[in-house]
Amino acid sequence: MVELHSLFEKLRRMEALHARTTFDGERQAAEQALESLRQRLRELSKNETIEMTFTMGDGYSHRLFLAMVRRYGIKPYRYRGQRRTTVVIRAPKSFIDDTIWPAFQELNAELHSQLRDITAKLIAESVWEDSSDAGEIPGLPAK
Image (cartoon, rainbow, N blue to C red):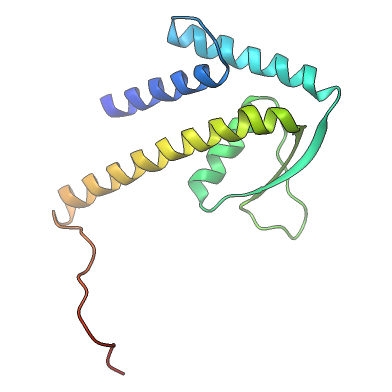
């Protein structure tokens, strides 16, 4: 549970960093950062809104991206016939390029790092301690 709490705190700090806030209190900084980002998004939306399509490689990334854009007040969607991992949003290009995408990449990398660590720990403690890759042998497989 302590690891989960530290992950939440790390995610809040990352968000505050992407919002370029200077507040010291992490919770206050995260809340202020979110409001700052929403205000910036409203201002930019008046001039330069575009539609952009994103395709996520896995369900965890997909869910994280959906949560992030919704948190900024952006409504994600997809067109009929598009895969479930496809997300389309309408937002200012500069906001996508400068805020959403860099923050998503950083949070997604942290999420996957945590998931790898948790998975390795679960396997080592409940299945078998050696979960390394299979070794290679010379030659071709038998038919």
